[in-house]
Length: 115
Length: 114
Image (cartoon, one colour):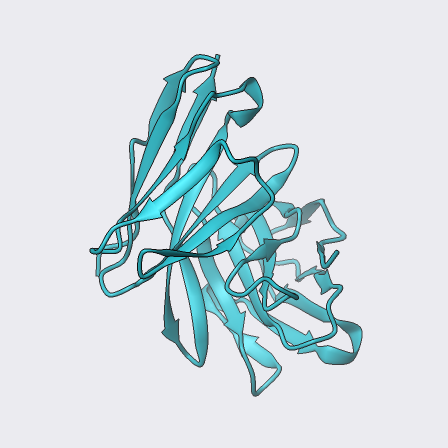
């Protein structure tokens, strides 16, 4: 079955450290890729998305992600994290076989940023 | 534009009862999807409706059903509740922007089954 993998389940960083969260998917066809964030007590919010074109996409709050088709990856990056980035981050994919508009999510990465 | 709204926000039910959750999409969005979020299983797709028709369905038992109205508002129903149905139920509406469909999520309905 097609799936999305997030290898880091828990990440702890100090403020100003750089962040990279991994995301891989198992399908080799055309996919659309998303990163969502869930801040404590808040609903899922869209960070960024990739449909086509430039594989380096920029999102809100200084986040960016790079689509590497040959590696089936869509890693999320931020050069300098802030305490307010503490949240759970989900990678998600549509376009997996038979899925249509269905979002298949990774298991999430809980990020804690310490002062 | 107002975001996706879901009602109620919290529900407590007992085993065997049924429940109906409601979702109002972003104005102009015609697609509504439902997801279940639990600590053990993560975020799982339930179904998607587009123009009052179910367009896609996840791997949930028939106790989970939904519908969409002509104004794009959607409801999902869970019959004969089980303890394992305790979860956060998320609704997302989608519209086309930037070359593809993007889903925007509501705050969810937290269901506790006792």
